[in-house]
Amino acid sequence: MKNLLRNLFVMLVAFLLLGTLLSLWGNTKSKPEEIAFAQLAAQAQSDSIEKISVVKDRLEVTLKDGRKQVAIKESGQPLTELLSSLGVSSEKISAIQISVDEPSGFEAILSVVLPILLPVLLLIVVIYFMMRSAQGANNRALSFGQSQPREANLGGKDKVSFSDVAGVKEAKEELSEVVEFLREPQKFTALGAKIPRGVLLLGSPGTGKTLLARAVAGEANVPFFSISGSEFVEMFVGVGASRVRDLFKRAKKSAPCIIFIDEIDAVGRRRGAGLGGSHDEREQTLNQILVEMDGFEVNDGVIVMAATNRPDVLDPALMRPGRFDRQVVLDEPDIADREAILEIHARKKPLAKDVVLRKIAERTPGFSGADLANVLNEGAILAARHNKKIIDMIELMEAIEKVMLGPERKSRILTPKEKEVTAYHEAGHAVLAHFLPNADPVHKVSIISRGRAGGYTLKLPSEDRHLQTKEYFLDEIAVLLGGYLAESMIFGDVTTGATSDLRRATALARRLVTDFGMSDKLGPRTYGEKEEMIFLGREIHEQRDYSEKAAEAIDAEITGFISEGRRRAELILKQHKAELEKTAQLLLKQETIEQEEFSQLMSA
Image (tube, rainbow, N blue to C red):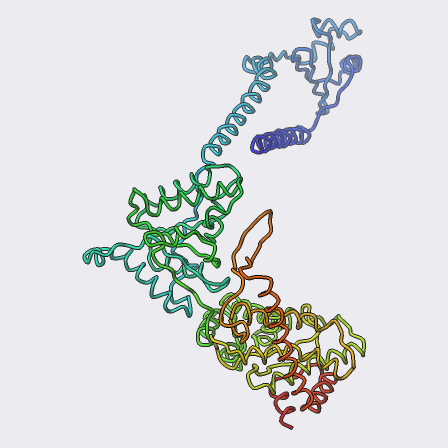
């Protein structure tokens, strides 16, 4: 229908333009003067007319001075008789050159046929476009169950190879074997090895799953079809399964090839949790994927790659050998990997000579590859905002904080009292983080608002750690309580500024008890089975597997951990109250304290 309306609109505009051009062309000609027949007779009597051309009832008059005129005579009457009846003498009439021009046969036919032919032609054109639109709608209806995968362009400047992916060394080794199998299958089949059916990429958002899949496509140099898991599922039952069949049918024709399904958890969730409707359609689609990957029909040469950050919700049938034979985990990059990732993203950016990517890597623990790319991009934006031609270290450091906490909110003006409370609050966090033995070192303290925070204390680990101790968590709880306790110690009252800190401290204490088994009283066990159950849009994350009596004990242990953190924090703050005062006063004076200045202040 949309195409039909569009075609009609185009035809209407074309006719209007054609009519406008014809009218303009007609207007450009010099039109002769129109006169009455009596005036024509007067001019003939006065011997002013040189020539008269008669075309039916139209008289085209040429005067002796060269002017052109037009007159209309009565139908069926000769011109000479009409002039004589108006008193023009026969001598005057014979002095005029009178010629009779009959229209050609073609013009006569055209004058009769054209008024009938134009509407007929217009009707034929309208019917043609209507039939064409209807045929297109039928084709779309027939192709509704067909998949629309995107075939990657393996050439050009957008080509990605393993050299463009930093870190994830083990993942690249696993996928290098897949690439080699696609290039030289005989090397493996000679030893009886079978090509893997599927490769599942697991990792947090931003760790480079899709980028790694593109690198496999670039390295293998085979057809690469990419599609999202959500593109299979429709509101109509059976469409998703039909699209899966069509996708694998196309892939078999192009074998050896790779099919990449991004966000496969959209269609590969555990079966049996649906309540009807779209869930039934999703499960049918999943069933078809399972059959296509490993069913009665063998799909040699078709490798299915998929990516997800939620492996816990996938159906077990997807994870068994014969389906996704290999599960490649992409971890968060360590400091060396972060430096390598920064080097890749800095290739096309003009960095100043003082920029040391190692320092940026040290200051970004826990950042994913996407976060690091965002840091360099934000640094370039800040440099452009400052009208610079190169990116300095100061812009990159500012970009790190912007990515972590949000942009500075300098327009948020605090009252002198609020500013003082914020200074002592952040000083409490910083002093505790410096003097507690297991806390992370302080890199920056500021009372400038960023994001939702009125101020912030930036503390980062000195090295990448994968295991944490109970003492570390207790010191972390103490640091979180530092702002609350500093407000209480200095002002004798507390504010709402500690709400987020208290929430995080409580959540950490709960994890110590229920997840990490670090409670001496409750022992080494976990509490609460973490599952995802979607019902009417709600996500229920925990199923209780303990009694009410145990719940009371858990609450008591959580309170005990928080009390222990408070005891440690109060002891440090009382011992180092002078350092607390110096830090708060310096914050009130200059609003921001960097790591070196803070270390000198604590050692003074």
